[in-house]
Length: 110
Figure 1 (tube, rainbow, N blue to C red):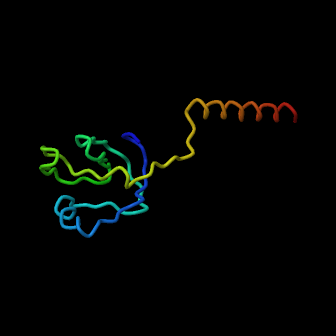
Figure 2 (cartoon, helix red, strand yellow; figure 1 turned 45 degrees about the vertical axis):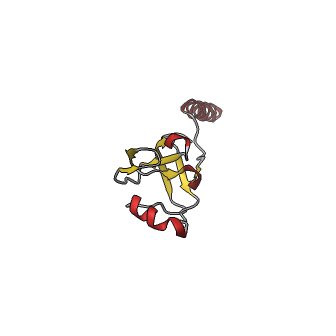
Figure 3 (cartoon, one colour; figure 1 turned 135 degrees about the vertical axis):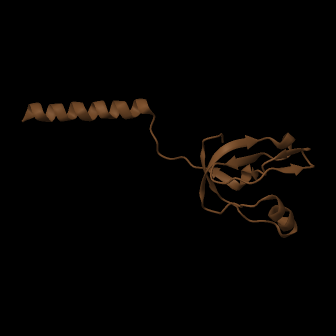
């Protein structure tokens, strides 16, 4: 995954023993089956890779574990990358050329 990728939340569950901590750190939480766009990926000093999302902005907090202020990030394992059926611009151009050629042949055949 990388910034700009579309992802879907596959796990929005909060463990009961972490509920107070999560509610304190995150004003806005994610929703299962909702699509998001990765804004930034944070290494968090190798503890757990986290993602910031275009659609969700939380206030930065001080985290003792990483010894700095940052926006709370969602664990990357909570998301799955979406792979839309998109074609690169070159492929679209080639398809358009083929369609145009087919149309020209039809006109000539008439």
